[in-house]
Length: 454
Ligand code: SF4
Image (cartoon, rainbow, N blue to C red; front, side, top):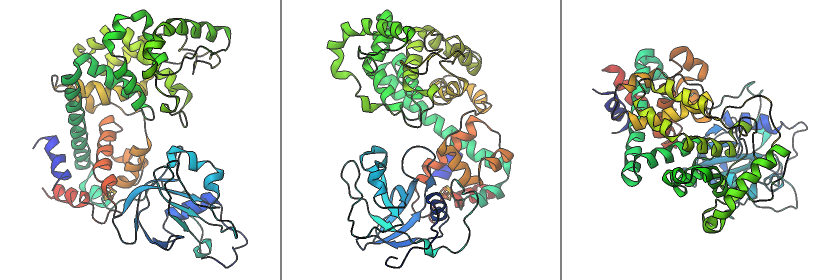
């Protein structure tokens, strides 16, 4: 049985009484909510019955407190979405959530303190009314957990433990293979539509945008095809920054940034009139929770550097050791300005900042280069399996918490590789994100058991 078919087999078939004198703080309330100490059944402020089918996961980034929760109203099918907990119902507006698109996915707003005589509503930026539930701290009797877990341990953790390390690794490796083959199919479809180089160009742009800016970078690569940039090499950077909406002609800064911006502007303005309609709107880019070195302007600079070195990019297809050759190419990408600036206007940094660091290179390998090349070079699978994971992300950590009880347990049992991480992500997407029953009706545990009996 092939690895891919192993995974395919797993995949298919209160109110008026006074508040306690010392009410817990918001963080403690969040922890105790997540631990289920308030229960799972509630009434909304407008009288609807609410059942929490899945508490979701802690959000460590910008946005609502809990993501990927499942909530049912009046016994209907559970709705997936986010949950926000505030002390005061008016905090929703005070904190600007009502105008923040990140909160559009909220399906339930929890609050603690009732304000007599003040009527307000929870509305999203698109004016959707969000159901509200008041939770009562007096229901809490004992101390909160010292360290709240990222996510609750799933029902599949037991069969995965009983399976033993080697077979649990087989399950995740099979899921990683399935994920890789899906990405290969996507590359193939893009190649049929736009040709191999443009397909590679677009997928590289998306991978550079990870996580928050994959879409605007993909749009940029679609609107500025590689063949155009290669034909107008002297203008390529200016076109990319101009179409990204980062160059307006009024930027100022220290002498060095001014000179760089002037050069971008002088090359961009002759194109500007013709291209204005395609310039990405300012709101396309997500900057919150983005590390300085991952600022989208640096990603655009990296994309420009890859376009300039395109023959070296395509030569990777023949490299005997793909990972080593890709890391070497990344080290060779040079840009005097971007090696010392986080953004177009930021002050010069003395230390050199790599345009593409090792973590980004591994993302590109896992999401673009191996999927693109594996169909014609099957021997790359062994190299892929050995690729160490350096980057972690919320989804992978959540999956590790739900399937294995956390990254510490996972690392003690299985190798810390890109393949294990990709396998976790695939199971999380195929099972956890489709489950709205708090694991009760998820098929994964039984399928893992059956796999273990073979
Ligand atoms: S939903 Fe399924 S795969 Fe996810 S933690 Fe629960 S049992 Fe495991």
